Length: 133
Image (cartoon, rainbow, N blue to C red; front, top):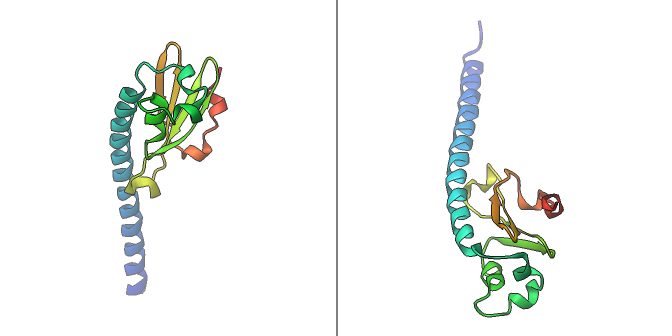
């Protein structure tokens, strides 16, 4: 006969695992919703931007009303790497779900427009050079 304590322990362990995956699934859904909202905000912020807007990012971020200043003022801004034909900016939004699911927003700015992607990894793991062609 199996001891009553062992059965209780196994049941408790199963409940903990189920709860963990339930919280993780909820966090993933919340993260997706919040990231979609953030992409919409960043799309509006970066609308009409070109790589030239970011070539002299430090100087541009000191210019009142510039898109570089608006980007640098974002609380979740991580970095921008700009070249003549492409700028790649990273944003790491925060939320309680960060402990369960890391997300990063990568904005690729070209003369043709702005594309935003949401890789499901922390920004620190994103190599902006990978987004250059």
